[in-house]
Length: 143
Ligand code: RB5
Figure 1 (cartoon, rainbow, N blue to C red):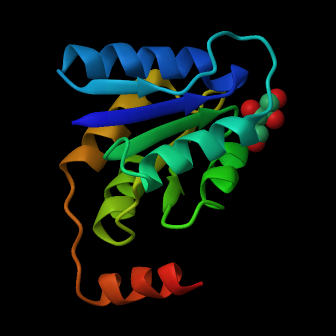
Figure 2: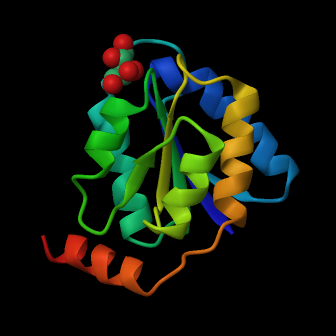
Figure 3: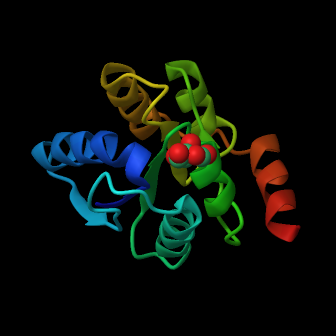
């Protein structure tokens, strides 16, 4: 399975830690940058990960900026993207169960690596519940 990763400078260290974790677990990574802690603009990376997932270049994505707010706003501007900014394991599970989120966003400056890894595991292992939740995400697709 291919996982897309993207961050700005404030999420770079978290992105690299996530990359190392997922590669060890056998996932193929599509790393869309950024490539250092030099200041960059998060909309570029939110757009890149949104387009990669929407176009099927990766099955899902993980996006990181300082808070996760800016990069998630940018990713959600791409049609077909449901990017969920999560700050707890419960939110990560519900982002899959209820929203079928195809990108998980988090804050490199606001979330510990330990919590980030737990959220990723929970999101990967959760299953979309469908039914009324499918109706609701279909409404999103029509917007
Ligand atoms: C960068 O300083 C910071 O604004 C950015 O990473 C992000 O937190 C924006 O939402």
